[in-house]
Length: 184
Image 1 (cartoon, helix red, strand yellow):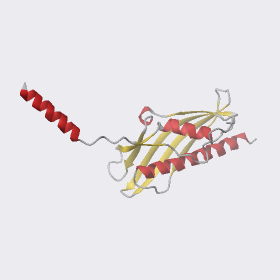
Image 2 (cartoon, helix red, strand yellow; image 1 turned 90 degrees about the vertical axis):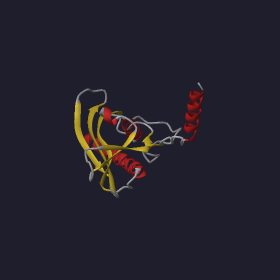
Image 3 (cartoon, one colour; image 1 turned 45 degrees about the horizontal axis):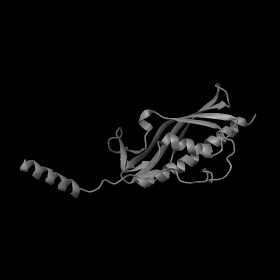
Image 4 (cartoon, one colour; image 1 turned 45 degrees about the vertical axis):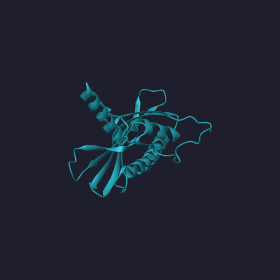
């Protein structure tokens, strides 16, 4: 019985000496121009649905070392999105005030940081978009968007900054596309 107490006491003291696990830092796309100020009356905007494959629907920030095992997807341990990328993109697009005469269905296809070399990283955002007349189930147009950042920092902060910039570019490109559809 004494041995059991000694083992328990040793276990508790060992566990007490270990470092506390650090909670990951949470990120979103920031409060750029596309995001509305709180308290302002919101104008009508297009209905937006954003989906992604299950493997891309969690809050981990992904990266890939193209120079070493390019088929292996890795994740930052101490940094995460505050919500899955499809939810973040939906909020960002909705804040951009897309034409309310349309509804938009976006399928997120790729959302990762890629390293060509250890110090050379960029981020990739690839999605397809289907546009429908508001209230209609008949697809009017489809388009695929592929956006790649310039060089970003080779770390989680670089990935977050790059994705925030690409989200803004994606919103602007979708808005321009919808405007071109409205022209006779």
